[in-house]
Image (cartoon, rainbow, N blue to C red; front, side, top):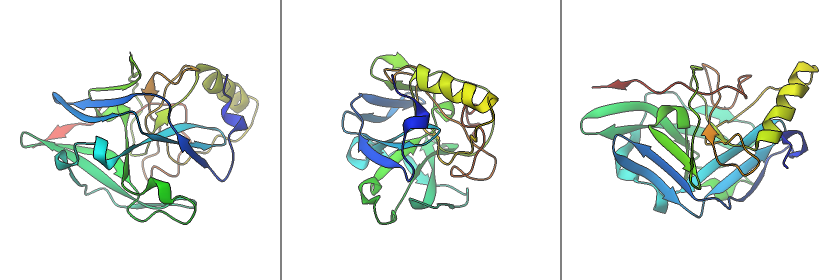
Length: 200
């Protein structure tokens, strides 16, 4: 079983072995068996889906300001525009990733709490009630629980990104955590994002 405290820092990028799907307003925003995951100490893995497997025509630039990750560079946020309704900051991407993270170019990460459904393989995501604007990803239940125990024991839990994530060792459920300012600076690593409000 994976333990988030065993993940490296700086973060590592590796292929995600799971089938990733993201749905919003009756549309499959992402459907991929070629995603990447980013592993960083104390953080659940963050899932990045390649552009070719994303309905990018449904994504538009967000009014949410760009944020900076010390490792990956400047993140740009994306709204979903579906049937004249705008779903704010459902995803983010690194248009020009920093050296060492070039693999993330043309990939998108999604907030499971801001879409209608997200899966890693066949199991749906777990929705939660935290609110903020930050990125998220999948994680094993053992890694998550060990991270919580470590937090109670006084270990640091400051996070960066937190998009598609799961709460099982098999990385099947996805949720995301964040702070109100950036997907790269958050202490809410264990929390999930509330569904985004659709606006016209």
